[in-house]
Amino acid sequence: MQAAIQVCTEASQPRTSRQQCCSNTARIRVLTHDSAHQLSGHRQTFSSRAIRRHRCSAATASSKPYVGSLVANELKFAIVIARFNDLVTKLLLEGALEAFDRHGGDRDSVDVVWVPGSFELPIMAKAMAKSGKYDGVVAIGTVVRGSTTHYEAVANAAAGGLLGAGQDSGVPVIFGVLTTENMEQALDRAGGKTGNKGGEAAVTAIEMANLLKTLRAEGKAAPAW
Image (cartoon, rainbow, N blue to C red):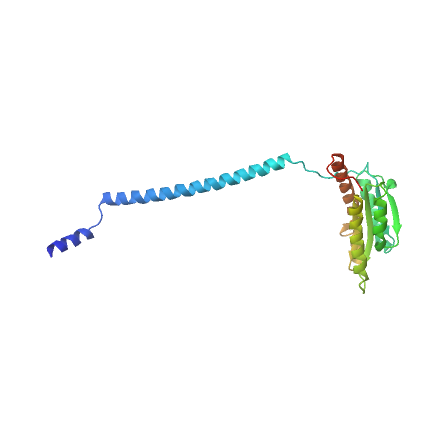
């Protein structure tokens, strides 16, 4: 009985300083091993990211970016414009001509062709684009929503037709047709509080014409067809 009591008493005694030190040392070793493993993993992650960034930077540095110039002094343009809603389209035309002037072009060298309405823009734009005499064609019109579905028919035909004119000719055909809910919105976009979309279309034509001209000179874009 006394022996049992003695064993229990010895087991219940607190650890000596040496035992605690050994236990703490073992714990520290475990933590140090885990921390080293985690640090190694982080280093591998950082290294992989650095390699990816380096490869991306090298690819960007070796590639040549192409941006179209906004100088129009050696370019020839045509403007196809709808006579319907000419209260607005005349303002859009003036905005386009002013933009050509500001960017070094000569408005007297811009051929302006009037058609009855926006529905007739695509066929004339395509015919002029395929003539080989122009670096770009700007199509200008205004379609205002009415009480019938005529608005959707005209707007969709103009958008799709002008897109096709550019794709079928290899010459930039720029969409400068306003499609608005009312006349007030149209006037706002023809020199009013939201700028002049005719001028914006002209600048787009200059940029696209120069971009294609540069790429074709280097054999990186097909010639107009």
